[in-house]
Amino acid sequence: MTCGNIVYYPSEDTEIIYYKNFDRSYPTHTHANHITIGYVIEGCVHLVCDGQENLYHAGDCFCIMPDIPHAMEPVNDRAYSMVSVCIAVDKVPCESDNEISYSKRLKQIILNTPENVFLIEDMAQSIGISPFHMIRQFKALCGLTPHQFQIQCRVRKAQKMLERGKSVVEAAYATGFCDQSHFDRCFRKIVRLTPSEYKQSVKR
Image 1 (tube, rainbow, N blue to C red):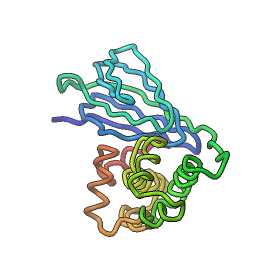
Image 2: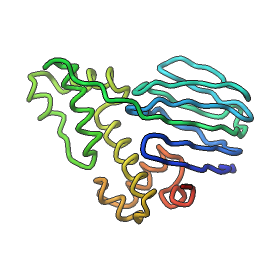
Image 3: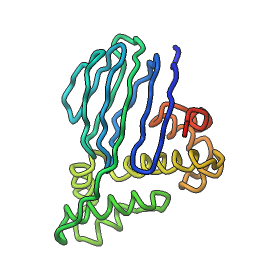
């Protein structure tokens, strides 16, 4: 299995990713506060977006809105080439003090400090609901459970640190991972590269 090449072109508000002859799949994830636009150059990809399945062939475009859960895989294990652009959008303000706005605030807190420890039981008790109901409410808003969202945000923050030249060890511990192996597993699951491979793939 050849993974082909991935090149990342990050900036403050936009990230461009170029996949060449790539044949790895991405499990369900989201892009918080980002719109993702993809253009398939060669091959075909199978995209499951918010429960809807579609095939995109060479010349096709797709658009994924913020916080929509999606997964992607090659078709028949054949490599594809694609360009993906992630564009930051404005944050949505919280209108009122209810469960939905609390979930929005919690989302922003995790985005800002994903390395912190957040206990679901304590957060649910603070607004008088059950942990199960809070997880369901958060997933309805963000597409992931609070824990899944936090791990994803930790990895995204680690990506930014690696882009700025920080070492893999520095990025792992600064983003709240207790050991290197856990960091490597989570990073590879989401990015489909090891942290070291990602450092090599980043272009300014």
